[in-house]
Length: 440
Image 1 (tube, one colour):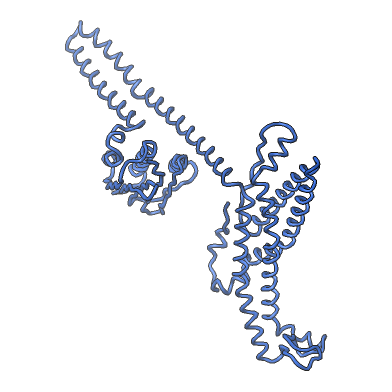
Image 2: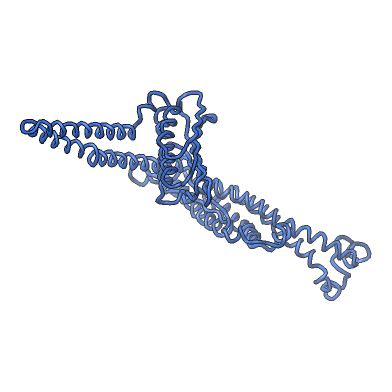
């Protein structure tokens, strides 16, 4: 669920203060129109729900009652679709469409039972019942503020109607029918009071309207959207896909590094040793030189294998924890890095590993792209969350845009209920924070 207002409306410069321009803003009139439609929509939803559920429940002793109950819930779902569309158009509230009801089993009874057991369907029915009294109230309040406010504010312009058409001095506030006792708005003081009261209602009306529109936002978002369980299942399925894709990408990277790095070097080393073996019989000095060169290649191959093993899971992280591992990462960065780790203990290895590789990738970005002269790494615990912060004084401009390395990193963090926040304005500095569950 999301709502907001277009950037052009949010950023437009205004001369008048908000209190004076609110009655004339498009948002006020859209929300006012929404509240006016609450009454007819509330009546339709309430009448449909009460009638169909009552008839269906009364006929449950026959087979007809069950389909009628399902039809009633289906009608509530249709009303919910209209309400979501209305909220999207007038309140700029975007509520996701609930998914179809899963059916376990086959046959008509299984389908009917699934619809009757759907929490989403019953939440739509509850919305139709609750929205009717709220629709009556919000319609009455909105139309009262509008009519009385604008009517009294403009009263001096249309007061002439009363002496011309009704033969009385002005609008009667109270009094007897014989016209001898009462209060009619007709003097200059009455006019001034009318304009003052009307102006107050006109200025207060938009804020009352916005408050009631927020109640509608909560009703639509809370009752007509997907259930929290369904949303959570969707998130977990998405996160599982990210984890699987990340694991597959890591396996491909390891295979590529082995094939192009250590494996190719070892194949070349075996060939060099074979040539050295033949050369030793003919020219011992040249053979010894070739063996010496092969020895150097062995050292390089071992270093590549160590780097590859460190990329899979560094031994220093397993043996000594995040403090030593972060210091090791900082020592390999091309800019000076100040590291501060304040942890009361160690999280589970999976979270520890994700924190390590998050800092590793961020420090690589600092080295390659930031142009910074210094950087900082801070790691601490807040309640049940592991907090990681990496900052630098570089040129800035980092973003979570699609296709960027940070977007992939954010996806990895999200797979374990983590969050990545980026603050990197053009010109710097860059501040990137990661939040992970502690899960000891």
